[in-house]
Length: 139
Image 1 (tube, rainbow, N blue to C red):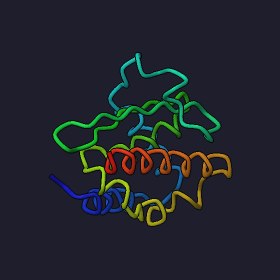
Image 2 (cartoon, rainbow, N blue to C red):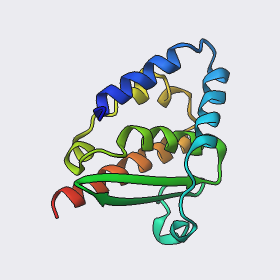
Image 3 (cartoon, rainbow, N blue to C red):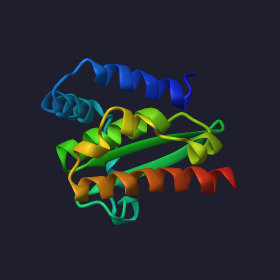
Image 4 (cartoon, rainbow, N blue to C red):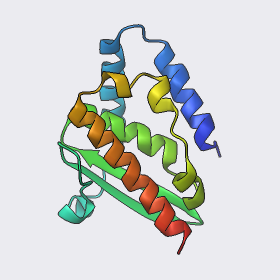
């Protein structure tokens, strides 16, 4: 099983192939399209991430000591962003998720190329996933 940092390094390498930000956006849109669909039972208000301008649903379940995330969004760029976060954090231990340093966000230039509302949404997504990790690690 790859660690959080190994997965982040893979993402940084993948994004390094693109010189233009429009190409990186296209890649993120493709990643969002490939995101496995969240079960419709979890597309409820209780699974919405607060603080996101678009709707982002997040579900987590613990299996064999690892947390598995599923997610969806009604906005294509946001769906790509949550797809990246799910890829990095899903299948990891609760403690690893709660302590993760998500350096790939800066390394690929994501934070500099998002609108302020999307940046706030990204922060909310990360906080929500880490909070789930923290609460499951301490239970």
